[in-house]
Image 1 (tube, rainbow over the protein chains, first blue to last red):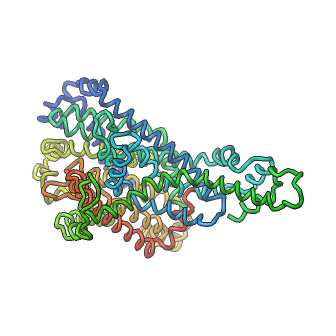
Image 2: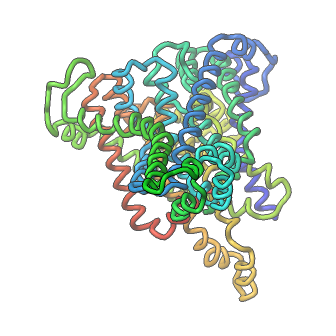
Image 3: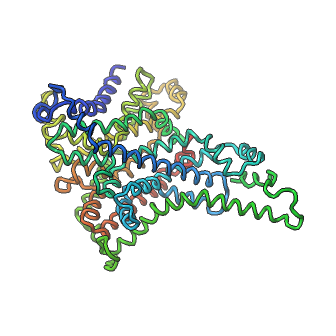
Length: 267
Length: 329
């Protein structure tokens, strides 16, 4: 059907052209972007991208984002799988209440809590500290992690656990040696979700960090734009480069991520 | 689960050994209970400490701070009762901000949702390059809000890409100062939000569509239904659970709007794109009126919570069992 192809082409253009324009614009001069924004760069200049790639500011931001995302993801997946194990394969009084407490966190996104969090971090001396961003991010990733992992762990047959116990394994050993490896697909899904969420978070770092060398990538992009308003071409280059890590993660993880979302919704 | 209990009794008690005197047969059971308690503590304490420490405690503090006039330094002494709440709830700028959040939520449901459904139906057909197209549509969702916001900020500058494009194709009459116009700014933000999030909705809906057996449509076609009728009467009702989850996520997201708005407009011009969270950021954090800002947190939380409860109760009743408890596979 040519009509539907036309619609799809239009959607693809709206989706992709802005990003392509940004990337190509990074090769222009600021003068050209101001006077003749919609023609190809003439001449093509590499200095915008060059100056960003060689700047400490950019790499520091990438490094901070990576450290925070790795710590937050590691904590969320480790602690989340521990909780999911206890909540799926033990029966004890108050189990459903504990589960409900975690799921209540789903209704409560990080952005709503930023101001009280900031006050708490101030009190315990974690403002302007990478841990002050990573720990809350991990905590706010726990609900979705547990909600996805619990049914997954629950669905793993009990005979496996019985067999492990017969063979003399403790339950914690069963958890580490058998359950976690079997839960790998779900662990990867929650890991990617936690990582991407952390990588993209803007408001918490905005509130917590005052020292520019602590800035994460989203914060650095926004700050660079508002600091170098007149230097449009370099802002183009900085913003275009900031897309690369996210796109790389996406290409690396797309099957798992989209597959995970499919699983999470299809039920 | 019931079977975890039986696992203990079915298995031989490996720790007690055979030499236990008959008089203390109850000891292994007690030891087992003890051990279970230790295991549960080891497993549950760390996640609970992290969660309560950084999610629950701040919220409880917020409720407490909201009763004080407090700038964040020194002890809480200036107790003012519900005066902060009166200030927030009767403040004209907060009303404006809340209205903007609601407008974005309504526009999402009225415009974004039908477009997403149409595109998902289109992308669900067998065609060449299907996977590539799905990935392309999903791409903006992967970018950080900050990157997307700065990108569109650059594109919507008075002499930027969008206006130059309009001039270039002979639509110079449509050229505007997109982000400087109090009447346009909110709708421009909605366009950017749509660009950023529509791919996520499409992927959700595609997942829902894959759960609908093709035979149902075929049967309808055999009974003489037109493709439109089959879509309207068979596909859409079966897509209901996915659509209701989409609406839920979309409304909650609209209430929490901050990043894109703050980077592109700072809530301006003249408060024309203020949202509840930009309002909180300006009044609570920038002006260090933490008591007042905490009040906005509580109000926003209550609004989200009431919406979530009401929505669960009236719209999701039948769906949530499937959507939440059977999350993966």
